[in-house]
Length: 294
Image (tube, rainbow, N blue to C red):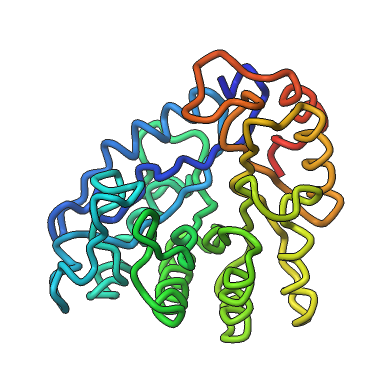
């Protein structure tokens, strides 16, 4: 469907890049599932933003009771591609080794690349919405300091293997005050030193006119920090219209976003997309360059 619309980028969610999916046992790498995803994307001419999940069950239990890090059955992503145990890595050295191997396999430099690699993966998002910690949705069971530690280690390891790779901050969940406070604290602690691209979400809540870009960008402007901003989740409610999708996307770009990722392509419909079915507004946005590389 992405090829029909003219989409140039995809952000698989959760995606195939969880540490424990690739390194199921300590020191044993199996990239087969990730390779299939990367190959399917390149067969359709689609570039990937890969989300890194720094969790492997064999590591999580090394330094703590595993149960302290587990999410419950009510969690939206329980028993999914993301391991249920979601604290920061116990062994940062082994986590870093995994990241170097991951970046090297998909960077397209001709050294230890995936066989047949044509479209490299050079943009990596470190986790997702770490400020979201509820019974229904917890992507990271850790403090703000824990996330900063993971971000710093991830940026260092990836850029060691792939200096041209770009690090994308974990998507900010929105612009509720506690979310803005979380990311203000991260910026004050120096997080911007470890990512190249800022990242905000609009999940049918907040500033529709700019897809939350305007209030999120203000956090950076107030601190004299300049980063490109991507909206990596734009999701509309069932009452939305083609006109609202178009105007809000234009508003996000005008407010400073350089890229917008949509969670589905049928306006007014919730749930998983239906292959081959999409609203015509997304063809217009593709023609405007909203979904193109760059």
